[in-house]
Image 1 (cartoon, one colour):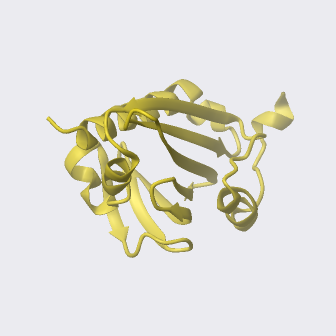
Image 2 (cartoon, one colour):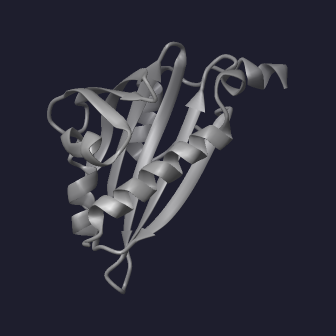
Length: 163
């Protein structure tokens, strides 16, 4: 239990190159969350909204601070609930997956966003995240992590669904 509380996870380079870039999260992390939503829009439309990070503040509670190209290896900075996060894209697979690693203070995360086109023209979107670092469960919780994912998914679904 104590060892798990102080788990730091792999180095950021390993987390990025060997986990995130291969569509994996850190399954040993103290906090892991996965949430799914079926969006009433085709995967191409959902991707268009999801991959346009510059527009995220117009439909979500996230703030983009610095953004260049949305491509593997490219860095970006953003804020979630006022917390500054430094991230780097690991997977940018149009219409399928957007994954990045993120760091703030001593905490490291992998965020995966996977799109699955459904036969009826809708899209299943799954957000999966691992969050690790010393005392992580005392700083944050899986409940809060899941709540942020579910709010983001609902906002994405609303932005992607025609009125």
